[in-house]
Image (spheres, rainbow, N blue to C red):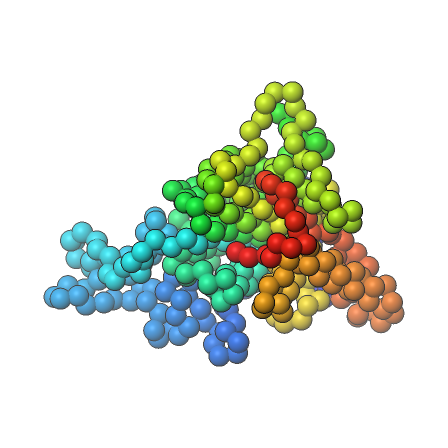
Length: 380
């Protein structure tokens, strides 16, 4: 999938000889749209002006100069470190109280690989904007991992992603809303623990997966599902191939039949797949056997993941709220509409845009508990 034409479709599962994905438009610089008023957005201080951006700037406090230190491992404080040899200090503290919203957003582009993705940065920006503007997440409580980050701790390596996930659920309390978002490659591996109905484990690919390995669904389940206490809600939104049951949750919603289906481990040995009283909900780009797609069909600049684009678009178009069933219905209808348009298209150029297989995926909902998808409003 090396073609550079904006009309070429990309699948998030084509790694040359390996069964992975290829998609997304990689921009050389992190940009975000602010309803036409700006083209620059700092992921650290949230400034929309390069002149006012705090990153790398120097601040005078008393008689000493302090430089913004974005290497704070807590991921939620802006650290000012002294330009002298004196100990670092924090000034001012942007977290005067404990917030009950926290998010980890991962966009992996594999920029130096031939299976690079070309839209994960766009996807991550869209998700961050949705969390901040629509669901009122404090920007200092959102940890973003991309290959464009200057802080080495925020590069989406396997170690950094797992550390961020542990930070996400650490000391969670009743009333907390947690979000894990991932846009990148996804794979399947043979299941040796016999805890998968289809015989395959689902995995996510960090930027260094060739050297360090993939992140398995079992690891995600034990890291961010097990610790969820009563009253805590986690949403995982995964825009990757083979991501249907990426969290190994016990219930999968069959959209066509309108029922919850059992996804309990088939192994004879007891396998823990449940929370500690909290609720985990996962919205995946496609079923385990399918490949997720990115496309330029939606307009705008660059590529967008189908799941991410349709999710953020649908939420923004329904400011008063939409149920989980309604959200799934909107996304399924939009995919069918584009596919119908592609089949009726005779123009050669448009055929490249609306290829009959450009969107061959079915967004999937899974959960640690059954709930009424027709009445429960989607909220993060």
